[in-house]
Length: 195
Image 1 (cartoon, rainbow, N blue to C red):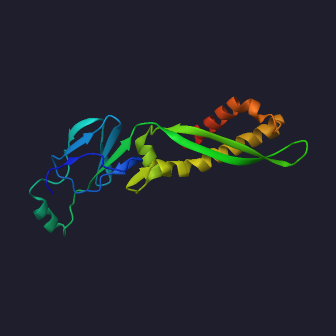
Image 2 (image 1 turned 180 degrees about the vertical axis):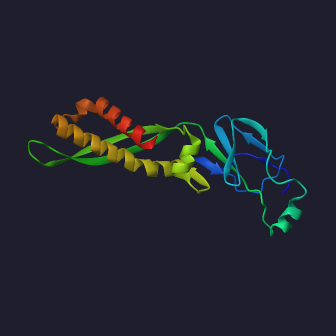
Image 3 (image 1 turned 90 degrees about the vertical axis):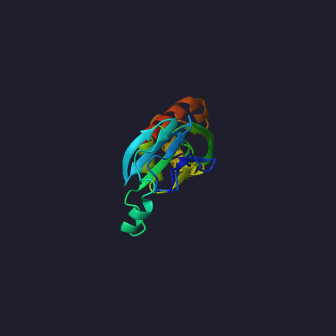
């Protein structure tokens, strides 16, 4: 493989994208935008974390010798270099909604309580995100994040409201007066769960 220029070419809604080629040539150029961060792995180990700018790959296969090396290793390169791109931009388009049954303490009837909201996300620790969420996938989209986190949001909301009703004897009809406290409580519980 010749020296090449590598840039993010993932789908528009991708927050994590792995460059499809892992037979990277020494001296190839890596261009990272301001809204991105790149992580370079060599043979499965993190080699470097790069911020925006133009970078020269200092690991990989030597140009011109790939054919010889691949013949010696049965058409496979002994040096596997993976490049992962992470979007650093916060996403604000995560909306959710749910019906939560809340038992009224006086009547002992379950009353369906409608809840909806939105949340924003930004990848704070790319390596942790990769290990916990992405795994061996070659890309990870906003929709996948939404699918994985929506259950956490709804579960934490149900737990928090259930505790409010039981501990404080809150009335399902007056929970709307405690929206700020409920939002803060759910936010804190989600931060603990996801971090």
